[in-house]
Structure formats: C-alpha cells, structure tokens
Image (cartoon, rainbow, N blue to C red; front, side):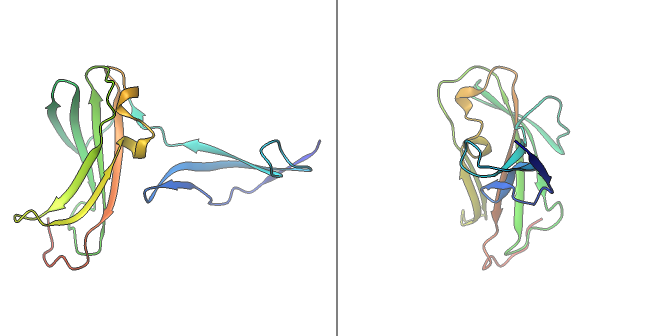
Length: 156
C-alpha cells in the first residue's frame, strides 16, 4: 500500500461558530480506507480541560457547592456594537462529581431585560458535559453570539 502526504487544507470542523477540531495532517491512500474514502485527515481537538489558565477577569462565584465560576475572558475588549460578534469564555471549576448535565445561558440584556444577544448550550457545546467533570477539573467554555443589529446603544 502506498500513501501520499497532502497539504492540510482548512477544513476545521466547527460547532456553534467556533473551531473545535483543527486539521493537522492529511494522507491520501491508493485505495479506499475502511472509513469509506481514499483521504484521511488527522484532527487536533481544542481540549476544554485546562490546568492553570490565565483569566482576564477572575471571579469566585460558587454555584451551590457543585461548580465555581473562576472567571471569564471577553472579546472584543472595548466596545460591543450592534451586529458585532461577542466571544465570552467562561472558566468553570468542578467542586464535586455530578450526575446532572447543566446548561449554560449567556444573555446580553439591557436594563429593561431586553435580550440583544445570547448563546445557550451545554458546556463546550456538549463536548464536556458536567456529568463527566471530576472534582478539581477546570473547563474552558467558549460562547459566541452576535449582538442584534437593531440594538441602538453601544455597550462598554
């Protein structure tokens, strides 16, 4: 069997507008693989579990003795304008083993509780359910959403 090394094309697999698997190596075989095609791509996952992350905005919010919100990163760092993309990365720490899979609700709202942007999902788009977390695990959980284009005010 012979094989040919191919350039890796940008065919990242995406989930909820963000890259979770990055292609790192591609191979073309002379005949079809067991998976059904002649090309095989190796992906590198963006692992959600981290050890000592740098957190731009540290917090210590305890959620019922089960989970602690250690902080967040926010992009863009300056202004959030109508139609702009917001990337919020939350850092969760598991305080105990859990049987329940919790969902995260991220909402950008004004004083009248009008929602101008949101992303609701299980942590890491269900790639790291809370029922898998063990005490001491720190999970990087990114949420991306677009601010409603008809939102009148710019927020800082």
